Image (cartoon, rainbow, N blue to C red; front, side):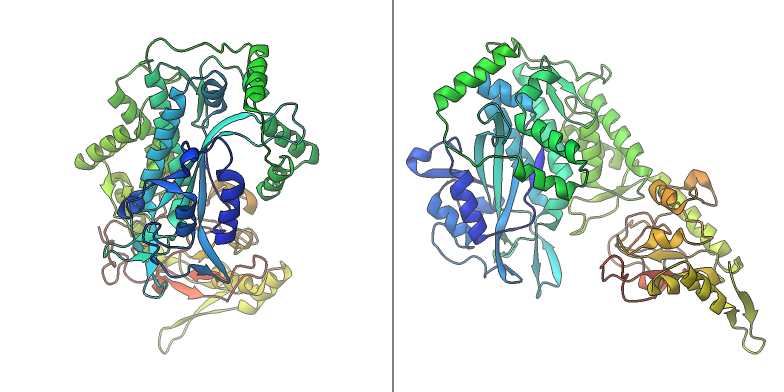
Length: 574
């Protein structure tokens, strides 16, 4: 499992966290020589960093070169606080921690170390910096991260034993990254955070592969994770006192909100304390024997057979099967798929039977065969995006459909009036529509959007806004049918999703199929890769958009609700 700190840590927070947690007994080997962690990442290579002392770690927190003490970046402030960096934690399935720490198979510790490093290095491609006064993003592809290794979880406040075994690695990602010209800047971790699921999938896939190479067999889980074969659920729960305590507390209080659940995590743990390692080892071994765990088990030979629930195929065939699943799963929602999402879905499906290198080899093969089309990358999609010939064909047909029918519509409410002198068209009766909208309890910006939507003579219109700007609430208030409305939104609107051609409900989308700006008169939006829905897309061309108001009062979001009125040329840039 991969988790990130809730936002950036200040210099003071990071220093305190290091002294309390990172420097605790059991962290990175070599503490007797003053080494407290190991620097990883291409940024660390630029600085020639390897094993790190406490003094060097403090220098990194301040944005200084740990060797020369020279300033690498200016004071990285966000408001009044100086951001030192971010914490990323990678933890294996509980059965691996039991087998490595309690049963003593230290090979698993090295396997976990290698898998964690592999995943963090993949995440580097998502590193960003800003320049030109923070107005532009630039991809840097490097981080300075410090790895700390730990073997225990926090004690549960209601637990019957000492700290439970939990092998995990902290990676403190320093707030610095190097530009191509050699200058250093503050790190923008936006896309690294968005890549959390990708990092998790790469980490778990690599871990499963390396564990099977040691001879262990695994049991796949439906969420793309796994456990070592031979471990029963009760055995895992016996060594998961704090996790069980958290779940019991949540059930007792009826808590399902994730933000409130985080408070339970803090509430149910004891402060760190020094434990007698001999007594703790004896306690854990006694618990293992009580649960029927064989402390002496070691697999005899590597398990070459694929994970359960996958058919008996070659490794390349597993990669094809996994990528087929990912394509089917994602193309039902996206016309353009981010590389990270495609790989994540494939690796989770094929956990234990394929890996990142084979999936990427299959992606390259499909591009050469014309089955996948590279749609270009940007700072929002640093590892590329893809579409398919099928989506290109559907998009062309959608654009023709809109173009042919756009001016054949009629207002849902009001009367369409043509001025005989200049041929201009206006709609009468908007006052009654506004009165109706007010009676439905809509907010001012929603009312303006409703009036435009219900009285426009155009065949199609769409409401645009960021998440939380009450788009779905507005659509559900009136006689509007959403183009390819998501199932959840349709349910909230109290009506089924409606499209002119139901079989194409997933394809009402704008594709970006080439870099740069679209051709003049084109409807293609180079920045939009999400479904363009009545309740969906928040990044449509400004030429389509009429701003309705300044904000939604219910959401606290300063992004406006806007009405999209497509018109003019609809020739694609394909």
